[in-house]
Amino acid sequence: MNEKALIEEDHYENTNLRDNTIVVDENIVYQVPKTLKDADFHYCPGCAHSVVHRLIAEVIEEMDIQSETIGIAPVGCAVFAYNYLDVDMTEAAHGRASAVATGIKRVLPDKYVFSYQGDGDLAAIGTGETIHTCNRGENILIVFINNGIYGMTGGQMAPTTLVGMKSTTSPMGRDAITMGNPLKITELVAELPGTYYVTRQAVYKPNLVRRTKKAIRKGFELQKDKKGTCFIEVVANCPSNWKMTPIESNHWLEDNMIPFYPLGDIKTPDGRAK
Ligand SMILES: Cc1ncc(C[n+]2csc(CCOP(=O)(O)OP(=O)(O)O)c2C)c(N)n1
Ligand code: SF4
Ligand SMILES: [Mg+2]
Image 1 (cartoon, rainbow, N blue to C red):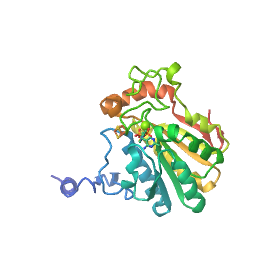
Image 2: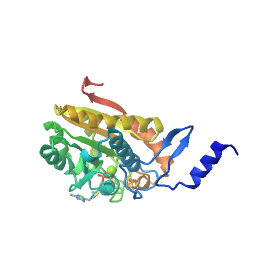
Image 3: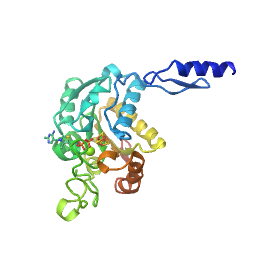
Image 4: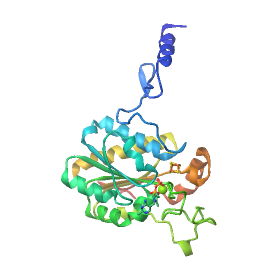
């Protein structure tokens, strides 16, 4: 065995899952960000929440803004986001995260303030707060995880549930006539004068994970401009309530969610993207 292989073998034997640095030809290809706490995620296997948490943690670490960032956790599966992200965080009542973020940002305007919210939280229970926060143009970042369902409470229909999609409260599939049409709240907030950067991303493929990370970084960086609300939707899976394996849920998301919720920038500081 040559010297490099010996070093690598020794390295692997001396690593554990939390401090797992893999070195290939001197380039670090994987490392747990310091902005993630030493806690195991409670999320179901394959759930997009954990990927997005990690991306937020990476961006905060890379921008070196850990001590300047304040997050607002939602009610929903991400209710324990403060157990994972090692930044100052507070919890908001269901749907009220952007209102709480507004208060914090106004008192501490130089902090980087973000809310992290599911679709039930942001587009159902907190619709009023979401629309008025974006309309006022609060200088915060809203990260919106749209899995088309109320995940935490057992898979009830959300405003974002697709027509025909089954949930515990639409067991035959959502019927637009009796249950209404799915709500594209991201397009809606893009119409408001207060939004500065609005984009829709996803994390079911590696290249999309990288794009989502870039969008999150942009959302944080643009807070310095103080020109309005940054809003990032992540079209996400919920394998447990969709009753699929993680891989099946990613295929289903690509085939069904993405045609209705197309990915890409909707509004940028330069103007409307499309
Ligand atoms: C005012 C209020 N209404 C309802 C609930 C119950 N509740 C808790 S989490 C949740 C669904 C959350 O769904 P979503 O925001 O989409 O998050 P996910 O779990 O899918 O990530 C609901 C309805 C609550 N806690 N408070
Ligand atoms: S119930 Fe759905 S959204 Fe919640 S952790 Fe599990 S897979 Fe993720
Ligand atoms: Mg949801």
